[in-house]
Length: 188
Image (cartoon, rainbow, N blue to C red; front, top):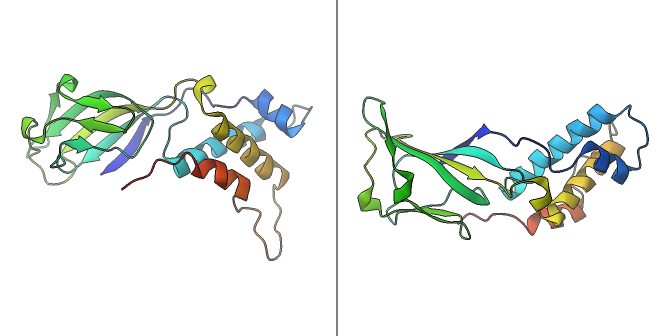
């Protein structure tokens, strides 16, 4: 199973003005740098937690349906199944009715009886599921993840261009790692 981003978040979970207040920056000279750090910190937190902070659309690609009929996208929080399609041997897609699937948002599972789903005609990437993930808007993002973003932005802002002998400033601060770890989507 693989996944690819189709539509990224429309905004960042932290505004430049909020980040500047946290950093105690009173000038506008570094606004572009701070905006880039916010985006990078969001990407970093999303990659480590496998959570979309702001609503976004992903395509989950499968070779075949799981025998138990339960697809676990390993992305969260699961919001909606937008579309499902199966490819035949010729590479032509057939759309499936998303109503035949049940979403278990708490478990992050898309379920349907495997016997009720058409088999893909090609051996690799024969199934595509487009899913919406994310907490929604910025005010719905867990505070612990927003704080992790703030602290990452501060760490990266304060350590721009520094190289420490015997220590790496690129390392994730332990407190940020602890915040992120508590929110990770686990894969079994």
